[in-house]
Image 1 (spheres, rainbow, N blue to C red):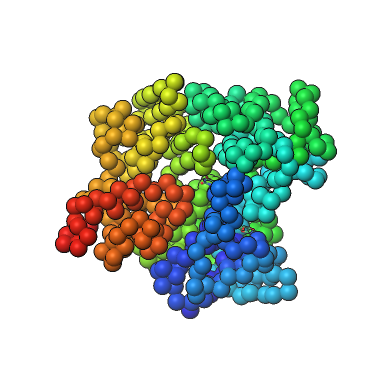
Image 2: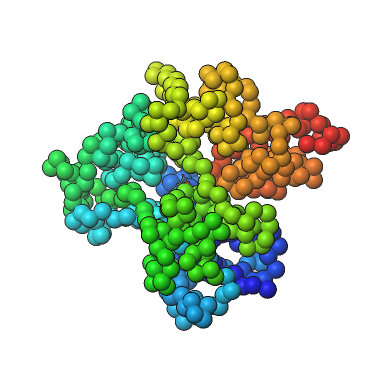
Length: 460
Ligand SMILES: Cc1cc2nc3c(=O)[nH]c(=O)nc-3n(C[C@H](O)[C@H](O)[C@H](O)COP(=O)(O)OP(=O)(O)OC[C@H]3O[C@@H](n4cnc5c(N)ncnc54)[C@H](O)[C@@H]3O)c2cc1C
């Protein structure tokens, strides 16, 4: 019975342990996590910041049968003895999985490592963002989510970003301009084309000489894979810990997944990539199904109430001259879409203010399905419905990306008596991640009830 030891109790490590149990791994599984809190859903930290959710609400489900230690940083890997060291305790392993995630980048500006400055990476960081005025540095997704969350809790918030608009690189000029307007409507002051050059007590200095009051400077300036442990152990590291298609490092007894790993020459960050790698590795280690990991499609959705923003596919697709582009803009209504198509198939999309289209477009992209001829209707959320809400759609369609819940899992739970969304959520965990699949699950539930009946004379 092989002993599997996981270093890192973030979403990747937690998901791996869950899936190993699911696939019936017969040996012991142990997680050693550095953070003092039980594992939690990191992407929703901005909800804690805004006061929309308590830290407890973000907790990932407990894993019966898994030995989990928190507040236990691993300090050293002894590859020869197949042991890892924490302060005072040594744990042996047959298979070691590094899921050490990423660390926030701290820009090299005077005062950035002093008091009143914090990155936002952990639950503990949320508590460090205090005071009546906060300057958020960084116009990426994290900067936008953090600024919107702080404004929602009534903090005087300024977002400073180097580009012409927040998320300009990702969304393009039109949609990022709409985002600036949405942030300003939400009460955020956006200072674009600027950067912070120094932190002084109670304020920050900008590159144009302006001084802004700031009780806290929140750094949302990127993150890098946490490779320190792997590097010290002599594993092959480039940007991340280099892994092959079996998610193996340069030592065949050690694997790496999530934000710390570099697969196919890229250190891909993001929750979906972390989960997909954890799912693949669980199958690889238990000998279930596919024995190789394939890359994860790039999907990104902003988690904020100020605007519905989503991107699918690689951002550079819009610069590819061989692809057809289609744009829809409703300036007054704050709705915008940009699609890059190869034939009738979607390669990439940017969606702003089109909440109803996000699930449909994401589904078409994920399953490489041809777009319906009425594109406008699709963007406005009209039929055709995505395959996953179709009673006859394949059971493997993933409805809840966060918890990897397939349509067939929901159908099984429904047949077992879970006849409401809350009951389906309890049985399968669908809707309990980002909540993005709530509408799809609600529709499935309603359709099964309408078309099959509560007595279930047909099988979904
Ligand atoms: C505020 C915020 C919002 C985000 N929003 C999104 C989003 O909307 N969409 C999205 O796709 N992604 C988002 N992300 C990124 C996403 O959270 C990460 O991709 C995901 O958490 C990666 O999971 P992971 O388990 O690989 O790494 P992490 O979540 O970083 O977890 C790694 C864990 O390993 C622990 N660890 C490190 N070293 C050791 C050691 N030596 N010993 C023991 N434990 C160790 C760390 O303490 C940490 O708990 C967001 C991130 C943040 C911070």
